Image (tube, rainbow, N blue to C red; front, side, top):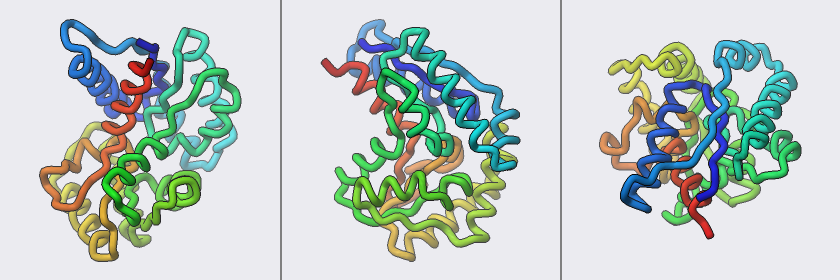
Length: 231
């Protein structure tokens, strides 16, 4: 079994889900007392959040490169960034490593293509929804059309993420707002919805929707297990 290197803490609530899914998936595949071989470097999200909203992405890139190199030095065979937004600097991080980086958008795209879907809605932070590093990769590399919520809807999602979900707060009112936004994307032609922030699955569950939801936390973690167990 390869050792999975995790960069977490963005937020720790979603990193906790990564750890749970990794170990659950290994147990499902190998049985017995098996669990995942993994290492995690967990950042202080207070520092990350402030730099994000100040647009200081160069400093954030330096932090992510340092974290990835620490995990690689500790013995990781490949790297997993446990958040969607911080894949903004994935190319820079990857270029400073000698081990692979498992990109969250790529493994999500594979699941979308398995379902034969061509057009999906994307939910996430404003950075993920509005900038090209994520939806551009889905379109240019994988041929998937991506639509995002309207401006006011993006503002609502972003505020729920940073004011509630990263703090572990779950609100029925916010859950209903997500339902309305997902319904809006569906009416605009989305065949599925990417939950493109690793906190969103804390609030949005597939059993509440008819449209397919792509839980990037679950997809990414399970893809990491597949890679770890590959011969």
